[in-house]
Image (cartoon, rainbow, N blue to C red; front, side):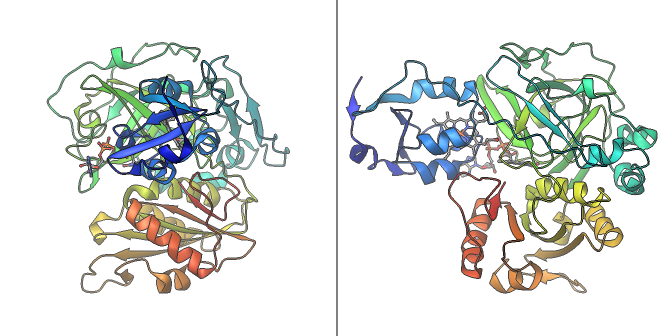
Length: 448
Ligand SMILES: Cc1cc2nc3c(=O)[nH]c(=O)nc-3n(C[C@H](O)[C@H](O)[C@H](O)COP(=O)(O)OP(=O)(O)OC[C@H]3O[C@@H](n4cnc5c(N)ncnc54)[C@H](O)[C@@H]3O)c2cc1C
Ligand code: HEM
């Protein structure tokens, strides 16, 4: 195999010509970069360098190593190369102390590449605690807006812990409602990959629930509902984390990340808010073609954020478009936990007021939990009578509507890359400490 020096690798760091070193191997990642589930930006930032540390820090699965193999063009001079590189063993978080709120930590080794460590806390804790259910249930108008599956939850107390969705890092779910159903009637059950050390769930599929046609919540944005393997299955996703959907699209394996808007109190279902791009590989070519009752493969939990009460005193948030989903998940968990006193201030940017996702729910949280949460909307062009902001999220807007940087404040960002890069620069100029390419929970500025 050809040997390269780091200096040679460093010459290939522009879009259209991207190389990097991972675990001693030199890779040409040019054609893969746009498909990278962790985002194109991370590849661009690390191209031309030895990206081993950043790659390891992201906690890649065995599948990532398989995808990587055809990209290997040589080795790094002087490096020790493992015959078969392995994913780094995931770090097992320290169990959370049991509080009056019954937090529970469950660690599960699947024996496969993904070890799912499922921390149940926050909302689930609140729900499980005797007498602690009240606050969750007062937010019921929110659940109503998420369709019939959620409504059954009103009287539920104890999620069945043995029915954790991501116990083995993998779960399949059946689509139960989707607004846009295309003409492609392909059955997707054959796409569900349940092999390789992950827990197998029975494929027993109930007849689908009634198809709902009115779930386009904004232009091209849909609320998709999926039925988990049983009515009692708890999603099992730690707050702040996301799932990936993996599918075979036109003969190519495509995987993309999504942050559910449902959580561990929504038994038996998984709900996603997704913007569909007509030419998008996963959204346009796959999700929009799903039929009611089709089976979809989810992996998780993924992501560097694992929110727990006490992480920080104040959280400033800037979200754009569908970037609201991880913020929403956190806001919901904080507001619905009686004992969480974290203050959150969100700036949410969209093109127009009609594009604002989860508007009713966000306003409802701001109204009912004013000590926990406030929100400021920004739109490109404000209509007459608009009482929020107009234009870009600049330093002035951030100074006015976010908490000032200090040891007790974190800034969370999620949205289109252009907006996020601009916000990171502004945040740095305002005194926030902006970390490296791969997000870490300890960073003061965390990008989902
Ligand atoms: C942690 C995380 C959580 C996320 N959560 C959500 C969520 O909750 N909801 C949500 O809707 N999304 C979410 N996303 C985004 C999601 O993962 C996908 O990126 C998104 O759904 C688009 O995927 P796609 O395969 O349909 O589109 P892609 O095929 O990846 O294309 C995306 C867009 O890029 C355009 N495009 C295609 N090729 C090019 C090119 N060569 N140059 C320039 N543009 C091009 C396409 O036209 C399309 O507009 C999240 C992302 C991350 C990383
Ligand atoms: C050829 C190189 C790479 C390949 C094949 C690859 C592949 C993947 C795959 C398949 C995933 C989905 C999650 C998984 O299955 O592990 C992923 C996610 C991710 N990758 Fe990479 N990756 C590469 C390089 C990198 C580099 C260099 C970085 C860091 C700079 C990085 C950071 C991430 C992050 C942060 C995620 C998101 C993890 C999550 O969703 O929790 N990747 N990558």
